[in-house]
Image (tube, rainbow, N blue to C red; front, side):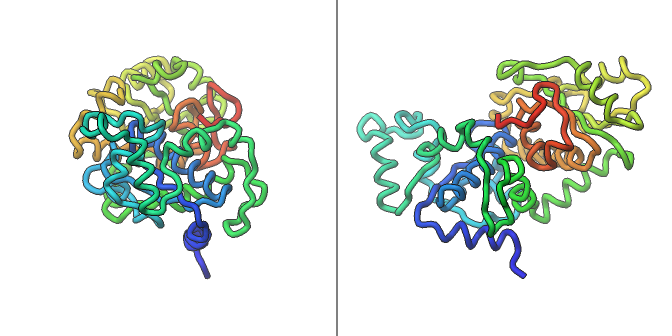
Length: 319
């Protein structure tokens, strides 16, 4: 019996037009992953073959996507993507391309596409796949079992299929999860601090706990946070609760700009823990967070909005 991934691969490769999508440009991992899933769905809806480029990704240790996951079904590893497959445009690609004062980057990207038979680079379709109107469209793809599915519903089988760790990653993440003795039943709460306040409204811990007390039957919660101060405050103000976390006392907020400057091995270990946290949260009775964070958006797609409750929006949104 043909698998779901095999059905996707067959359908994806049937299209004449193609997009080389660059993964791991400048944002956090969940943002990059969410955009990849949305890009895949956009391409299917518009009969475009989706190809992944992840070399030199901002999360990469050695080999981009393959550092963590089983090989992707369709890839393009040409190094020219590093400089000319961007996101918002190619008028300036940075000092790493010293000839840009002589040869305009957009001419190089056009020549690259012409020579190698590429229809689109990421910047060509970025604004279209990120159009909020896409979130209200329905997806009917019989080959993949989708019939008038919303974007968030259609995304779920894609995450089920493409969130598959390679053996080394699987072993490490299992060991990380085993470092804490989780109860059989618990809820999960994501409380982000750090640079999130520069992107959108942040909330104190009370709104999260108001929802937690509504949904928890045993007052046990796994906390995802980048600031251990959150854990200290929760334990002080809610002494009858049991809080579990992988956050350490040394962590006092996440800032993407600072994180991007860290060595590859440190970033690699950070992502392993992030994936462990996401797996723990997906196994909880209820996820509580914000849809205006990419983790909240991701969780809505992974486990379904019916298993999520967020303090900023009642319904899942494409952020």
